[in-house]
Each structure stands twice: as structure tokens, then as C-alpha cells.
Length: 207
Image (cartoon, rainbow, N blue to C red; front, side, top):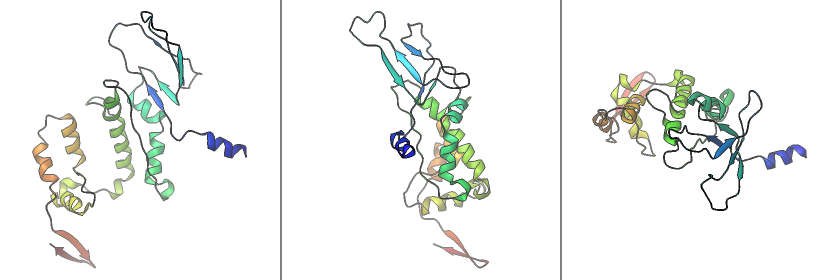
């Protein structure tokens, strides 16, 4: 009975807070409560600025974990349970996989894009997750750069009509100077392409 009650009261998802470094000299109105050695803090206290004469109460908030300004991308990746999400998507011990979701929420300029996409010098959670996925699925991957028809055939067979491109092209479009845009338009063309079907050692071309 106690175990059932514990599951019923458990949160549907975890909520983490990451504090962005401040590059301006201003009074800090947020305090992070100290945590036990080897653990992350979980509570913050927000106090109204001294020059704010409106009547505002001191508020306290609780999170699954609080990452302070010095936290690195890899700290977030490991400590927010992303590897466990990836393992669940792939399917532990070759079992049935499940959906997973990782999202950021915050005001403009709070660091959402940096956390998810990173930069040229520091990878974001997306790149770190893809790295783990590609390494895990390496035996089942094909190199689209070896044959242009591979990506074209995948695009033609994709019923969702999603935009597909090689990982290298995506990275160049995201962080490059836009030179890859012309290549992307060719790679993601949805024109009908011949599909090669192999039957008992015989290759048949279907238009």
C-alpha cells in the first residue's frame, strides 16, 4: 500500500533549473540553498530587489536539481537522466522501446538554445544524445556519403515527409556559414527515385 501511494504521489516528469551566468553588475535577488556534499541543490529563494518598494513576499521554489552558473553541458547531460531516456528509447536489453522527451522552457536569452544546441566549442544536449545513439546503433547505420541514392530512397519512403539530411549537413547548416544550403536542397528532394530491391541474390530495379 505504501509503495502504491509513493507511485501515485510521484511527479510525472522531472524539472531542473539551470542558472545562466550574469555578465552585468547587479544585485542578486536569488539564493541557492546549500546541498549535502556530493549532491545538487534543490531549492532556491527569490527575494525582491532592495529598490523595489512594492509589497512582494519572499518566495521559495523546489526543483529536482538546481545547476548553478558554473555547471557544464556534460554535467547537465549526465545529471538530468538523459542517458536513461536514451536507453528507454532504444529498448533496454533489446526490449520494447518507449518515447522520451527533453524540453527547455524559459524567457528569451535565458540559455535554452545554448543548453540544447550548444556551440562550436561546447556540444549541447542534442549533440551529446545523438553521439550516444550513433555509437549504440553503429552496427545498423549506413553511410549516406557513400551513395547519394541512400538518402533519396529514405526520403521517398518516409510517409511523414519529414526533412531528412546527413548529420554533417545539419551541423554545417546550424553552425556554419550557410554554404551547405544548396547541397541540402538536393539531398532533401522528394522526387521519386528508383528503389533497389534484392530478391534471393537478384537485384531488381523498381521505378
